[in-house]
Amino acid sequence: KTWEEFWGAKLEGKSYRLTYNQIVEELDTRYARFIDVEDGLLHQTDEILASLLPQEQRPLYMAGRDVVAQLRRADREAVLDFQRMVRELPEAEMQAAYDVFNAGRIQRITDIQKAEVASRLAMRGNPMAQSFFAAQAELKATILPDMRSAYMRAIGGAAEEGEQTLTGFERWLRIARTTEPSASDLRGFADKTEWVLGTADPSVRSAIDDIVAQYAEREITITPNAIVEELLNPG
Image (cartoon, rainbow, N blue to C red; front, side, top):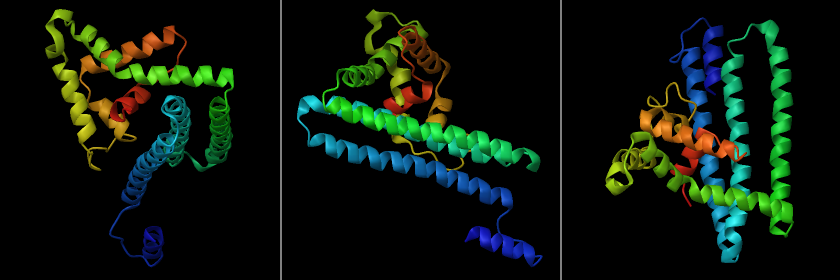
């Protein structure tokens, strides 16, 4: 409706209450919020379904659902990034950009479908699928302890100083979990995860980079965004 009113005013030679850039920015913000809302609702659904399973099967099930969720979110964020990028292109370059984007999106959707199948196979007892998702579940369970250890190294905290050395990290994490950023806070950030990363002090960022490097040595791919997502949504 907003676009209809905007272009209608343009055709009539009138000004509209919002500029083109303001409308585009608002739509981007709404889409980013939709990504978060969708993630939250689907995660709640997954947790409800997991609660119906035997206790010993729940970590494996949730590990599969988490992988699917990460792939799904990556696709949504790629759509948002493309929308922002393509607006700045000359018209002559747009078709080629859309072709590349569409090919990438087809691959991302295929990856989501494969992850769904692999998750079901794991629940049915497929050894290879179970091994992969069990590793994901173990990784998820170690994120917070690893962050604490990495933060200790980043600030040079001695082990005997105990939990007091973690004050900065714990304060950052508490604020990140309890604060819902406003539209103005999110200006310049793709979503809340990016904003949370942006609020991290150098020691926290160093700890995150340390974890990424540690897992890379073990041939496990994890991104700073994924680390923050897990810290924000434990369990």
